[in-house]
Length: 342
Ligand SMILES: Nc1ncnc2c1ncn2[C@@H]1O[C@H](COP(=O)(O)OP(=O)(O)O)[C@@H](O)[C@H]1O
Ligand SMILES: [Mg+2]
Image (cartoon, rainbow, N blue to C red):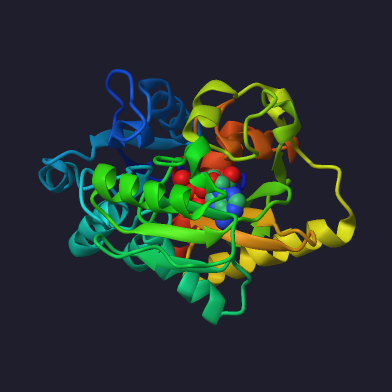
C-alpha cells in the first residue's frame, strides 16, 4: 500500500472471496444430505458479512461444476461451508479442489475434514493423543455388535447433523443394540458406531484459531424435553426444539469443569489437525468427567440458530465478527491481507 502524506493509505484492490456452499433445496428428511446443507438465508448472511468486511464475494455453489466455477472465478481465497455432494470424505472435497488449484480455503484441510467425518477414526486419533472419549466399537456391515456393558449408544460411523440419531439410539438391551446396528447398516450402507452411553451433561465448545481460543460453552438443556424423551440430542431435537430454553450459554458449571471442557476442546482441535474454526461436542460420564463425542470442522453458521453464532453473541462477537474472525485466521495462515480493501 502507498502511504499518503497525512498518514492515510490508498486502499489496495479488495480481497476476492469465493463462498463455497451446498444449498438446501426443499424440506430435508432425516437421512438425506439435504439435512446438512445450508438454506439461502445462511449463504446470504455470510456473503453480507464478508462484503461488510471489505471483500468482494462470489458465490460458488459446490455442485458437480465447482472445479470449473473455481477456474472461471479464480478467487484469492475460498470461504468454505460446503458439506459435500457424496462419498465418505465429502467434506474434504472443496478443500481438496482448492489445494489442487493452489487457492487458500478457510477451515480445516483435506486430512482433518476426512478424519473428523469418520467418527471411529477420529476417536482413535483422539485416544492416542490422550483425549478422553467414550469406549467405542466399529461394527462393519455384516458383523455382530460387541457384547459390551449396557447401556450402549448406536449411531452411524460417518454421518453428521444427528442423522441416524434417534430415540432408539440409546439401547438398554442386546436386542435393541442388534436392531439399531442393523437399521444403520441398511439405511446408511456404512458401519455402525457403538459407544458406551455417557449419561451426564452435554456441552458443545466453539474453537477459533490464531490465536487459539474458545467461545462461551453451550449446554444442551435436556430438562426441557418432553417427559419420557431420552436425554439425547437427536435429529428430531435439533429440528423441533431450537428455542433458547433448550440451551444454556454459558452453563452453570464449576470453573474447573469449564476449564476442562475448554482444554479438551482445544486438545481435540489440535490432535485432529483442525485450523481456523471447529466445534467440539462433549458429554460427561456417570462420574461427571467429560469426554469428547466428536469434532465438527464445518460447524453450522446459521445466524440466530446454529451453536457457533449463538455462542459468539454471548461472547460479544456479532455474526459479522465471527465470519471475519474465521476469514482472518485463514488469511493469517495463508499470508493474505483481507483488510487491504477496507
Ligand atoms: N456415547 C454417547 N453417549 C451418550 N449420548 C451420545 C453418545 N454419542 C452421541 N450421543 C448423543 O447423540 C448426539 C449426536 O452424536 P454426535 O456424535 O455428536 O454426532 P452428530 O455428528 O450427529 O452430531 C450427541 O449430541 C449426544 O446427545
Ligand atoms: Mg454432534
